[in-house]
Length: 608
Ligand code: M6R
Image (cartoon, rainbow, N blue to C red; front, side, top):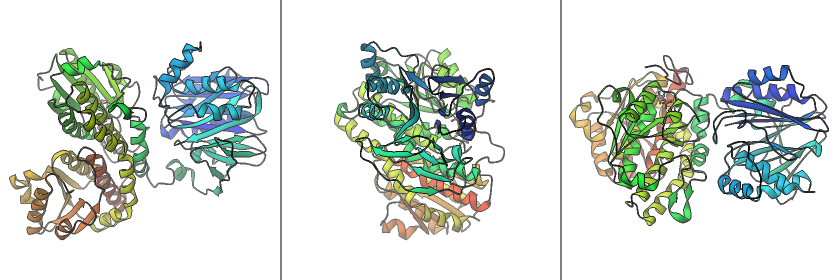
């Protein structure tokens, strides 16, 4: 998500921090800032927008000093602005943060009651106040450890204190942080590329580590103060490889980021004890949710497929009728939408012209509107009455992957909220569903561990020119998404169909040259899927089946099987899409296409 760089050494910190931040620019960000200690005081400079704007501000100003921290922010709490840009300060403490603080709202309330004044809308500023509160006469390192004992959430932190001009205290929990070891200088960053110009020797911090960096040394301890040893690794990646975290393409990196991204979507939102969810920006009272007569979803491409999955979830949990529209069709079909309807606009970028127009049209007709979006403060969330951010982090590959899984995660939370508000979902069932959702990131990990098998299937079918993707129920949108992924990045013809429709047309296509990718997990409609696959085999079609390991019936019908773990029907679509993404990715990679920037496509479609 956001980027962190820190420097302690004999050289001027500002140019090193700016260079490091510029090497993280590819990840996307919306504001940037620096803090540099000159031995007596810490000066802070922040700016919304790109680094060039910060560099412009630096031209007229001095930020001297050999100890400093820098940050590029990708907004999560509060829109991009100077006030919300990092570093944040309180008293003698100045810091930068990546991650999401779960209990920030309650901590903020408690701190405000004690008279502390906040100047931003960020969760990060809570850290600054907490550490300042703990600082008293303590060393910075201890104050950070004590403050961290009071927070829940994910963080990579780099902290300065006016009183200790020789050190940066850093800590991590779930957000990456790496130390770069130099000669007579030490550095820290959220990602390796930021530091490759200065060192090749890296120490990767682990969750629960707290480290103190000075020019001369780094010391790593647990939050309890116990020293820990972490190995030094030599990294010989090229700068381009480093940007992609060692992955060949951003798309591959983003596929692998999905367990983490989904966990970020859920962070702080599941109220386990109350079998409900907390959605801070939703801005609709329970009474209003209860009074809704219908949900209408409008979106494009992959986001539309997430909407199709949401239809199942909302109808299951909230017993509320849901219509899903392609946003490009919605506004031209004189839609019957108005009071009593909730229009949900789903968009990764928040800038898709058709989706924005659909939302505005629904609003004009009197519907309430909700944006499910990844990019904070983009046009779509700004135009909506309420917002549900997905917190997937920047997605660079044109083919959407982690945005999709996190959209479904966010929509799952919405469905539970609707179900609870409308009293259609019992506390027991809500608890069961939320427990399953909280466990979903682990299921995604399990699929990723089986990538070699999927790559082998991709190799076997790399020359196939026609693919049919079939599934039933909530997995049908996953078939559509699998086909879209393959078309987009490999330029191979692929179509998604509900398996029950096979006999009504597409079966005419089947022969030995056609590959049929089928989701056939055990559970509802499993037997029907087996029958569909038998029909494909009878016509010599090639079957690639996604199902459970050890399923012999399925094995007998499929040329190739890809295994996915068992999951509740509500969670299965999130899990089952991963093999589809990996299959498309590896087929495209065998063809050597430009996976991250496929021909004719743009990441954000801001024109009709
Ligand atoms: O930013 P959005 O989610 O509104 O974008 C919608 C589509 O343009 C997008 O999902 C597109 O289909 C992707 N290339 C799919 O991988």
